Image (cartoon, rainbow, N blue to C red; front, top):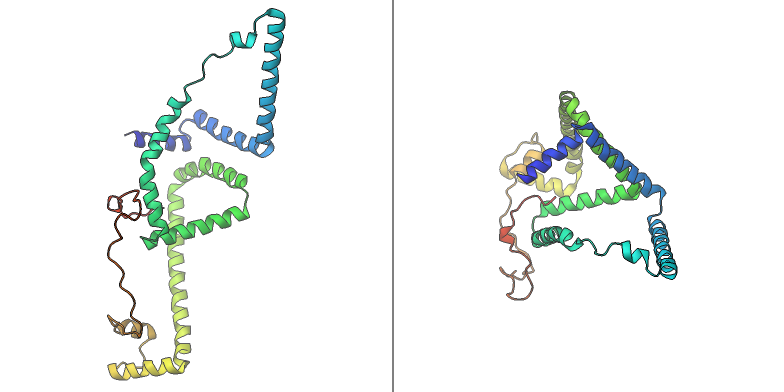
Length: 262
């Protein structure tokens, strides 16, 4: 219930259901990004710290010298806020989910599900190119603008956008099929000109009684694939199970569903 409530709250925020509340987050994010771009945070906080230290030290010294009692120690904060109690629930939740995330990352790195590993490689490559072309600040700024504008634009013009996307997908699919057919038609004569390959194809045609009008695509689909091949080198057998007590297992793989990690 809490997750669905948070999702609905976030959707309402991005859809400008409450313009005042959404405006606070939107303009606050823009202002924060502008400050990060214009202000050097390291020098800013160092200047803030030494100004506070000099001010409190001077007031405390002068008040003790002339009044006999330090004003800072008398009226200052006596206890620190309980930051441990505030941060501890978030750390506990993070540590609770860490073994599962760690096991999924290990499965991703060692390609237990190759499809997910390929997806991760493509995403990492795309992010690498993106951050090499644009600065982090530019990406954050564009992301904030898109986050607060694209959802409301899509909801407002949903029918028009969906029809355009369907038309674009249909066109792309048709063009891709045409290109694939053209490539196959162009590659077939080239393959026939290769002597050894053409000889093998002709021998197979004679044995199977296939006419010359059949395409290489149909021929390749009809070629039987041998279930076993003989080689001069015998490969060693791979053990079915890992050696016991050789490594620490952070999480049982059987408890993790084979789902898309990314």
